[in-house]
Length: 256
Image 1 (cartoon, rainbow, N blue to C red):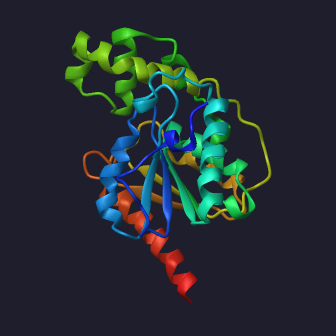
Image 2 (tube, rainbow, N blue to C red):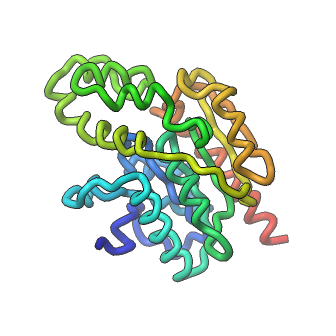
């Protein structure tokens, strides 16, 4: 079994940061992408990006089911939080938001997050969507063209067989993991929540966002930002500003 540290990638030692933001990537996404957001957060918070088994430095490990991924990430976050008591936030994009939500359900008491942020994700009760289930049955160019709907692959990659062979296996594995999700109703969470969605996201509209309110005691704040499903590419300013404002608001309350 991998050690706790295998679950996270970061920019390095974080002794001077008081807050952590655990970030969960989308299907096929690299957790290291989140590390580019660190400069925008400065010393207000440290990003620890989640690396699931089977990816990045954990490529020799078998890919987990979505339940195994959720349980493993929750255990790793609990371990580091109990070790030093630092406050933390959960952030996830698309599939990562779904995983982060289920992790949030498993955390309580001293290991509960300060805030939960879901980006580009339909409410869990609507997942997996019919579109994702259909895409997961495809392979090769058909799969690449289908996920192009989300804006995740440039046209030149879709057309290039060698590039597809290089980039698609991890995305396909993640889609198969996503269709294994089974939503179960549970108690509303007392954790404050924020939803961030691109105005031009072809997959996540107001109707898909609305049921998120059923999962929390207080209705989540909603931010509709410019862009599509991957509104933060290539410039993540909108979402980094939201994360920084949440952290700074909590730090202000603590100082008072």
